[in-house]
Length: 504
Ligand SMILES: Cc1cc2nc3c(=O)[nH]c(=O)nc-3n(C[C@H](O)[C@H](O)[C@H](O)COP(=O)(O)OP(=O)(O)OC[C@H]3O[C@@H](n4cnc5c(N)ncnc54)[C@H](O)[C@@H]3O)c2cc1C
Image 1 (cartoon, protein in one colour):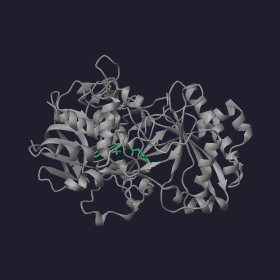
Image 2: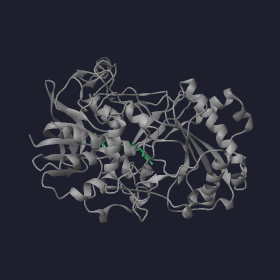
Image 3: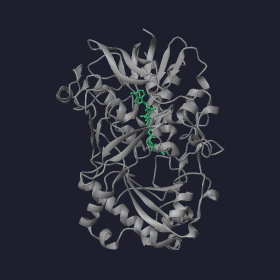
Image 4: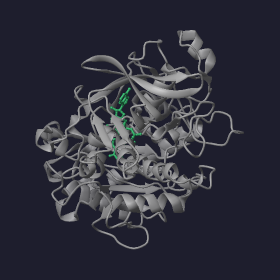
């Protein structure tokens, strides 16, 4: 055995977990990451500093999967994920937003409740703007909102239009109560530079003699002796080798973790046999329950009065609200993101309408037994009428905001979507299905739950059912997406899992 714990995947959750587990000096921890590591930040490309997610489509730092969004779209969507130390937290939009209490109370375990999630979220952050029982002041991730003096006139107009439309002001979106319009919390330092989980959690503890970090090492499959996980086959520049470990934790994220499990023989038995993977453990839930946040962008052409901004956030202000007649609180999010030079030159940007709690869910399946072959990803957005209904309302809300005096003088010719389409449920549904995209917030594909529930993959100690010495700690264990961006939840999951792994 080469280490006590092998953490596979140095992403949002994996970096947190490796840092927390290696606090115990007697425990040897190895963290492997498929993408590059930057032990000396001086050699990290500048592009990572921007909080806006500029390296997103660079294949040197991202996995690029094809995903079908709806059956009406001819072309697959480029489903990117971070492939670098820090994972998707190194390339994302740096919006550090929490779910609401109901999101964390629905996990069905007394080990995973809102009070426990809140403790972990507080431990993770240093909030520069708010104190009190909801916030932390000494955690590794700095959180701050873009001060209003840096907002563009367009974002000020969006805020004013929301107030005029009746949304309450919500200065702290990360408070679990209420809804409304407010500034976006971001994981950036005072200098506006991104602080991902590798920078926040891992860099300060790299010197630990019981922690080894290996970049550019791709896990191919978990190796089992009977039902006991004993190691991971990896590929790096020297070829294929085995890292043996007393315990293995998969933190590859909600796409790659179920992929790796299935490639290793843990998943729906019929499906595994159909692609030629020998079955270690039949677990029908692996790769199912793919939850995410569907979005549509309603194009607008802005005038010079909208201003421009090269730094700051892509979306410094947002609205969270409950869709009319919805049974789910704060199930929608609306923003007007992205003021960049390119936007200004092209004059095009858009209202971003998002379902924060979608009822439709998708799946991930293997294409072949070869571990490096990309999996099939089907998001299956808008299969449920309730999702279409809520999104239709959101598009109409965006249209109404665009007509508010605070915004309309900055918009050239109204929305880039005709009133004929907006006014017809049938036409708008067709447009939604054609234009749906994703927020890249995938969750749920190895969901936690009790043994009695169909489709659960891990127990509340994050242990994979039916095998030994194997856990999953990343967003794939969340039963659903939280009603917020999902990075802080990945951090929470790892903080909480480390505590659980440390308790007797
Ligand atoms: C483009 C984009 C924008 C986003 N914007 C935001 C935002 O603004 N705010 C927010 O809260 N959330 C955002 N998210 C989502 C958020 O980043 C993720 O929810 C979060 O990072 C998930 O954490 P994770 O640990 O589950 O997975 P990840 O952070 O994706 O980490 C998985 C890690 O595992 C590694 N890995 C995968 N397979 C292997 C393998 N076989 N061997 C070795 N290593 C492997 C990957 O390279 C990666 O480093 C965004 C995501 C994307 C992709």
